[in-house]
Length: 338
Image 1 (tube, one colour):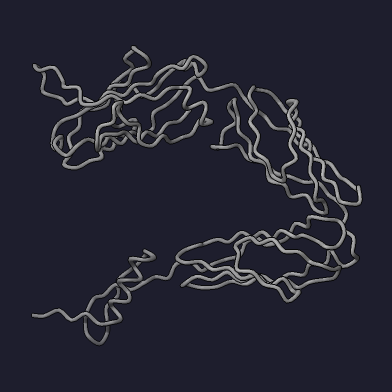
Image 2 (spheres, one colour; image 1 turned 45 degrees about the vertical axis):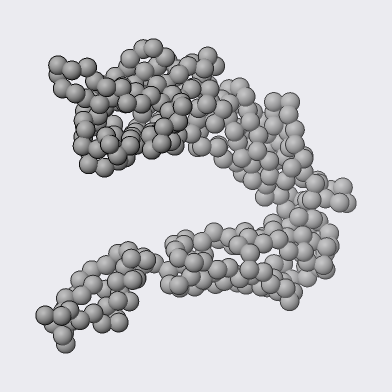
């Protein structure tokens, strides 16, 4: 019996593929059981506002926003209230004269839209006081030395900036990045200055801790050529020449083979007493298991130096450690913790 597929069902199936999330219902007229879309939540503007970059006209202004439930193709529209508009996500705009301006921000996608309207009254008198402010975050979400810190300047009324990082280094950038080489507590000062000489300053402390001494392997994805499919394989972990442990022996019909702790790492997954300044080597050797009476066959060896981890500021993920020399379709995706 031929199967009928209506246009509405095709639409529902397409929507499910695009947005996910569905349930079942029975069509009262045809008796079919069909899938239909449970609409995902619409766009929601959480925050929108401005940062004024001078104390007197003309006023350069940076606009910022934060939107939740971003899906599909998202478009942005700003009306600055002075006859000018922008389609940028977070635009910059210059107000030539003093005044109070009504700003409209609209965000849209295929599901919904949301609008934020707010008054900009700070420039009404023609003079904006300088108020220094900033926030910061640690690169890769850790503060091990050396620590890379990303600063976000939110100073209002200033167009010249001076940063003092507390380690004898300085910067004149608007929102700089800075690397603190050593552990310690640093008093970071930002001074914002306007063209008329008025200024404001703010100080915050940044904490940097000693490098970690332990590296934990969270998971390892092993990619091998197709001729190793359906073979039993495992991985040994070494720190320099010291064998630390092995994964379970697993077989797979396809690659990559995913190994996760602690389930697949009964023989060990922790590199202890790591010395990042001595350029130690973390080695991963993949073997083919040939049974209890035959030595395993070494398939590939992957090396990760501790200096590479340190110079990348302790990332949680190292993608595609490759063999040297490189072998096609042979690499490891490595996920680590500290």
